[in-house]
Structures are given as C-alpha cells and as structure tokens.
Length: 468
Image (cartoon, rainbow, N blue to C red):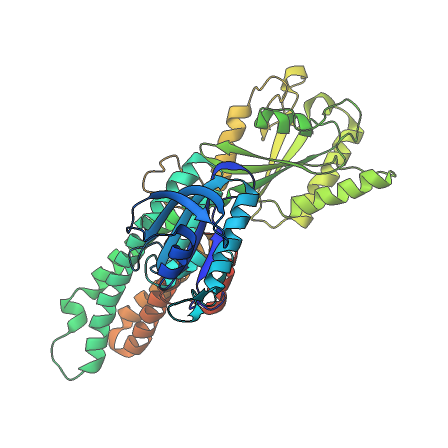
C-alpha cells in the first residue's frame, strides 16, 4: 500500500525532459489557500485561467494556465489543482518546489500552514486515490498505466476500451449473475422446510450454464487483451551462420544485427519488438550454438541458452545450403536434443529452413522454408507466430487485460465447474455449492478491486509513473 491517503500530494505530471508544456498537479482537501499563494486570485471551477505563477517574493516563475477541479468532481475525487507551464525541467522543478513551500507558509488568517503535510506524490498515487475514492475501479486504474505503456495501436485502443469501463462492465454482468444464483441457493438453505424447490423453479442449472458461457467469452477476450499488452517472446536459435541475424533484420525491417560470413559474429542477444497485426512480438537473436574455446563467445552462448529457456516460442533455424553436410546435421541433432531437455513441452519449437534462395537440394519435410535475404516465406512465418500466440484476427470488443485478470477468470471457471458438480447433487451438496459460488464471486471481485489485498494494491500502483 502506498503512503497515507490523507496527506495532500503534488508532482510533475508530465514526462521528464523538455517540451512545449509541462504540468504540475496537486491533490488534497481545501486547496484555496495554496491557490491564492501561487496564483494570487480565486479560480473558477473547471475553467482555465492564464496568469503568472509567483515565487515567495512575488517574482514570476512562469506564466501559464491554472485549472481548479473542486471535489468530488475531479480525477482523484479530491480538490485538484493543475498548473500548466512551459515544459522545461528547471521551470517545473521550481514550480513544484514553490507548491511545497507555499503549503508550508503560515496563513495570516489562521496562523497555520496553508496546506499542512503537502508532499511529493509517490508513483501511481493520484490513480490510487481515484480508486480509493470510487472514481474508477482497479481494472480501470490499471488501464491508465497500460494506455501510457501501450506499444501498438491495437493495444492503445484496447486499453482505452478498458479505461472506459468495458472490461469492468462485463465483470459486473458476471458478478450480478453469480449473486442471483447465490441468492437462490441461500434461499434453499435458509428455508429447507418449504415445499417450493427454489433451484428447480428458477432454472438454476440453466442459469449456471449460461453464466459459464458468458465467462468463456470474457476469458477469450481477456486472453486476447493480455496478448496485446504483453506480446510473446520469440527466440531465434541455431548454429552459427544459419542466418539468425538476417532473419531478425528481415522481420524488423531494419539493420539491427551485424551480418557477416564469419561464424560467431553475434556474441550476445539482440532484441527487437515488432508488430504483427497489432500484437507485440519480442524477437531475440542469439549467438550461434556450438562448442567454442573463445571465452567471449562462450558467454554469449550461455546467454543464448538463458534466452531460449525464457522464451514463449523458439525458431530453430537451419541452413538449407548445408543439409548434406554430416557434421552440420550431427550438430543440429545435438541442439534439437538439448532443446527438448531444457524446454517445457508447452514451449513450441518451430523448424525454420533458411536460405531458400540459395538451395538446390530437395526441401526437407516439415517446418517452414524461407529466405531471410529475399523475404520469401516471411508472411507465412508471421502467420505461424500469430497462431503460436493464440491470436484471433477479430479484435472488436477486445479490452486490454493483465495476467492477473486471466488468472482470476481461470479460478472463477474452476469454481463454477465445481459448482456444477454440486448443483447436480443438489440437496447433498448445497453448502458446498454455495461456497464455490462465493469463492467465484470473490475471484471476480479481485479484478475490479472489490476483494483485493493492500499488498497487491501497493504492487500495482507503485509501477505507475510519477504524477499519474
């Protein structure tokens, strides 16, 4: 959990560096004395006012726009003051320091500090207060950070959809249906002597079946959203001179890695994120896998195996111009065996046969033949990568989601599966049915923040940028 939510906070809300405009944001209770000290006048709510921002001695720090959002009609639900100045780092630091100084000054009318306890905000603290003051739920708060961090246009659109509440609305539909079902079960438990069979008359089995169908749709969209946010990590592996760096360059569309005929040119990992239909694909080129006496190359090969073990998928690159060479085939077989030993069965290894443009021998069966030099076969490779990721072309209605959301929905699914078993047994398992429905509702609540530990909140908001 972040620091005390009762203290007023201030921060520079724009990214570090120079720009045309920079913003200093203040949030707290009763900001009027601070506004008077900095702006020298009363501000009309939600109306931009052009004025000078003054230092303690009356000198002008800068001139810009001041906007006052009185509680509860603000982002945080508290009084909020935004000062829009020129975007130089020194100017913004002076303005932030002036806010802290003015807050500590004595108010002549009261003899007390103008805004006692004003401090610099921690990362994500403005969004945290918006969540705590019920301006947004937890999924929407996370969508703010995801929108800022979005690496593709599709991810940005989906994050915006989450921020608008689309994801939360579907979670609420599931929750309301769960509550309705729980109510029926509780009624049956509370009034066992009644002749009316609440569950049968209310079609509890049908309600639970429909609930699981809706859940399946939400899960599918959430998985697609998590993929848009996180993407997949794909490692290119193989022997030296198989064309790994050339393939990375071809996929990225730019010369990122050095390509030479000299074996062992790549000594360490080279990574680039590319977009395939809006999905971020983190492609990693690695050092050629072989036995080496070169200490630097050996370190690079160790790094290569480390990247392979952390991959979501491995492209095992083969050289078509050497498929008739015995030593080359033996080395490829050794690498293939090592991949099987080191990787989980869930990590796919795709055989890629490179240098199609220079090959005269018959093509091997299986895998994909391509030419990193001419680009032949690259579209097919991109399609394979999307299939590996589990991506579906229709992104309409997809909202950005996180791994924790997908995990929570999976737990809901497990609880509803158990509930289905207990519902079939009815009278013998009604207590267990009620408990599974309760646990399912709690798992849904974790997504929107209705049932969330303070430790989790601290982790989530501390990863936001300062000023957000």
